[in-house]
Every structure is written in C-alpha cells, then in structure tokens.
Amino acid sequence: MIYDTKRKSEYLGLDNIDVYFNDSKSEYIQVFDLPEILSLGKNSFLISFISEYFNSESDIKIEILDIERNPITLDIAQYIEGKTRRVNITVYNENISGLATITILGSLKKTLKNKSIPEKWKNLYNIKWQKNILIDKARPNVSQIRFYETPTLNCNILSKETPDIFLSSSIITGNNLKGWWDNNTNNYKIKSKNMFSCSEGVIQHCNISIPNLEFESEIDDIISLNKGVLHKIYTIEKNNQIQIKHFINEAFTMSYYYYNNNDLEDINNSEDYINFNIEKLETMSGRVHNIKVYVKNDSNPSSDEWKLLGDSILENKDILINNTKFTNQYIGHFYTQSWVDENWKLEIYNN
Image (tube, rainbow, N blue to C red):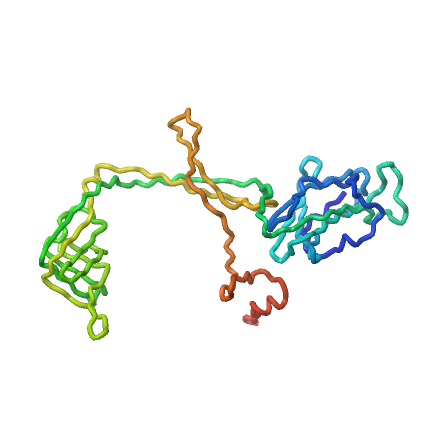
C-alpha cells in the first residue's frame, strides 16, 4: 500500500465521495492516539490498516476539513511505529475553531469474509473512515512532543579568571571643589586637591554632594587623583531658562567603595560558563516551549539532588510584522490576494 506523504493543504472534498463500504466500526482502518480536541499548532494521530485486504498499488488519502470546509495541513511520517504510521496535523490561525471532519479513503480488494469487491468498485476508492473532531485554537497545545529527528546537544566549558573583590569604603570632605563644563570633551568636570585618597585602587559607586548648591551626582569617571567627571550637570534656572553653571571653592562630601590592586595579584577565582548548542528541535507534534538546565554536585556522590541552573523560553521571532495597527499583523503569511495587495509592493529591479 502506498502512502501519499506530501503535505496536504489543497481541498480534496473526500467527505463527499461515494464509496462501497463505510468503515464505521474500524474493521479495516484503525486510528489511535487521536486527540479529543485539536489545538493551535502541531497535533498528531496513528493510523493502521489490515493490509491484506487493500490493493497494494493503491494510495491512502486523508483529509481534515474545518467547519467552513477549509483544509487542515497534514503530512504523514516517513517511518513506521510498530504496525502504525503517524499522521501530523498542523492547525494554523486561519483555520476556524469548531467541528471538523476527518476522512480517510482507501481501496479494498476483498472483504473480511473474503468476498470479492463488486466490479464497479474495483480499483477505486471504495472504503471510507470518517470521524468528527473539535478544533479549539484557544486551548493550550498539550500534545506529546515528538521530533522529526533526534535532537543533538553540544556544549563546551569556558573558564574566566576573576578576582576576589574585597571592597572598602571611604568618605572624603573638602572645601575647595571646582566644577565646570568642558567644551572639548563635552562633559562636566570637577577638581579638588587629593580628592581620591586610594591612588593604587579601583573606585566604584562614587557619589558627591555639594550642600551649599543643593546638588548631588554620581561620578562617572576618575581622571586623576584630583579630577573626575560628573554624571549630572550643575545647572540653574534664570529668566525661565536652564543654564549650565560653574562653581569654585565649594564644600563637598564624597563617598565611594574601592579595592586595592594588591588583592588582585594575590587572590583569584576561576568562573566556569557552559555554552549550549541544541539542534534538530523541529517537532511533528507538540511544541517545545522552554528548556531547563539542571546541575548536580559530583563532590557529594550520595546526593541525588538536581538544582535548576537555568530556564530559557524558546520563541520564534517573526520579523515580518506590521505594527502600525491596533494589533500586530503578520504580513509574512499570504492569506489572500487582498492581504498581499495591502501589505506588499512589487517592483522590477534591473529588468
């Protein structure tokens, strides 16, 4: 028996074809693992035949029509599961929720009682299996995940030397702070004698307060022991306009954290990172929504505890989107000619 393994999207109207025998009791055609409800995305079922009763050169036709008689996309898996073959069903957004009809046609050469098929029905589609099934696109797809190929996982470990950081804090006060806008570097600088006391250290989270000006800012960059760059610009409002203002000899209080370079030379840690590459995740049924990574401590062989290391959600990125409407329109799907005319323009390039 020949299986037609091409993807089905064209309308065939199999449910309207007259046949010699309607297999309402599944005597010749058996269907297993059929979901009660078809949800949006990929679904599947198993199909089996008593092959000795079918014409070996005939093909099997399968069609699912939604409530408005639009065909549901089908493809038949190339491999066999025991004595059955899996049929993959893909419900798209353009398919209509509601009652759908599954129709399967075949060609019998004899009956279970070894009676021959009437001459007028020989070598024709003469047996039909049919069933109604509900489509509900709003229902979550909980079909068992089945892959076209066995997924592969490759990973490599990346190591990075990092220092142990022993942070210390410091507070400095002074009364000789100068601030000005530097046109050459386009930033606001401050200057004061010995403003930063730890010349051999690395400064982090540095803040300065100038009480007399009621002004506070973070310091973005340390240029030298005496000079730095402010995150904010000191301004005043004059004649309903904001003006950049310089200042000199202002009292200030500055706080920051730092660690010494000597610490970096003596103590280091090695941080390990794992780079995962997972391929062949295309499914024939179900959908891979997320991937979780767990880790186990080999230093404690008696422990069976696995800890969650990461949880990544997999999403398809559709870049052909018209986001000027109230809701995103996926213009990469060519539903109708009017849809194409509205969203696409054809131009001839270099003849």
